[in-house]
Image (cartoon, rainbow over all chains, first blue to last red; front, side, top):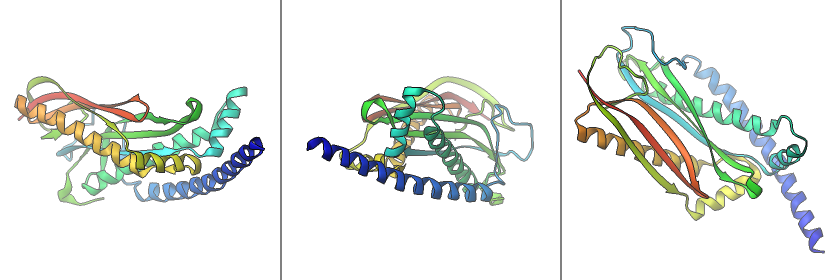
Amino acid sequence: MEAVYELILFLVLLALGYGFGQWAERSHYQSIFKREKELAGILVFAERLPPPDPAFKESRLVGGSVVISVDYFKRFLALLRSFIGGRVSSYESLLDRARREALLRMKMEAQEKGFQSVFNVKFETASISKGKGKNIGSIEVFVYGTALGSGSGSGSQ
Amino acid sequence: MLVSNLEIVPGKRVTKHLGLVQGSTVRAKHVGRDLMAGLKNIFGGELKGYTELLQESRQEATDRMLEQAKSLGANAVLNVRFSTSSVTQGAAELFVYGTAVVIE
């Protein structure tokens, strides 16, 4: 009897995870696409040294971070995946969302402070909590770089 | 105090190097947040409490680094790097380091 309850609980969690997880991912991607268009004016570079430009008067460290958790259904898929190997697409989309979200937050900070470009951008990823059985529960992505520009005086864009 | 992760400051010259400065903090999450995180582990999505917690901790680590830089007499910290590691279950260390310099 207990086994039946456990199975029912498992199926309910799986269904909840699937429903809410898919919904959360879709709405998150929509908001990412929208904000990426809005912030397209802020240029981001991975270059270590900025080109000599007299417009770069001010410099300031900016960063953005996000902690995102994977849902129950996707974690189950990843578990199944670990038996046969190959691409774990459920985690790929999780990391993609987290990176893009963190990048957008960094861009937003740069824009708020009146900068137009960010140099030497670094990504930092850490798994901050483990789920059951050493699965990745949630990940943190932190993006930082140095914003260069004429500073807050000139206003955004 | 100027903080930057570039090696140079555009338009300014570094007149003095004062060496490495660093700051770190180890933070644990509290039970309430952990409970919420447990729910989010089923539904998925952003853990806002954790995002804030880590942001605060990172700010604290940076403040410690800046304090050290100030006591050395620096007016800028260049080439700043951040690093995160989970020490134990439920606690994370945030570490930040850079080079303290004097710019003109």
